[in-house]
Length: 205
Image (cartoon, rainbow, N blue to C red; front, side):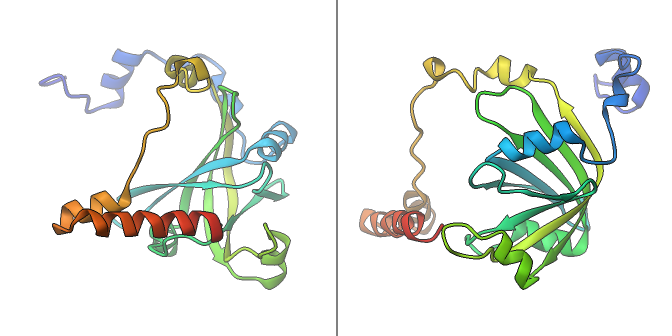
């Protein structure tokens, strides 16, 4: 390695070591019963996409446990709810369908990962089947599974993410203050934006 920069696979394995023999066998190309059970209990998934130049975006998706539907062993569907309409991930899927999913269950250190190819659909029957709070999904992200595997819990164990006694309290994020600071606006503008966002959180899930 020059200047301590890892540039080759051999460089990488010299630092992290060789994979444990047989460990890659945990990776399968379908959703088995263990994965189905995990998805049914998961209220949260991170959807990773990238554009045609490889720039990556990671978008959180959440709803009641099991909101992601397992259609069959090779297909999962994520309902899309009202959002900010920037649609970064959707735009990426249109030019590069390869996506990655990371499913979480509160208090569970292990995660489930799925990689595959996505498409966007507005099939009326499917959107209705994915309804929540009396409203059909806006659209659906249908993913053909190419890889499915569980990830060990070390990151969550190290971070104490599920240990309430280690939490520092809720961090306040003010979109209004950010906007006002970047546009040299006053506190009244910041407050009105934050108020509008609270209304949106309450009325537009």
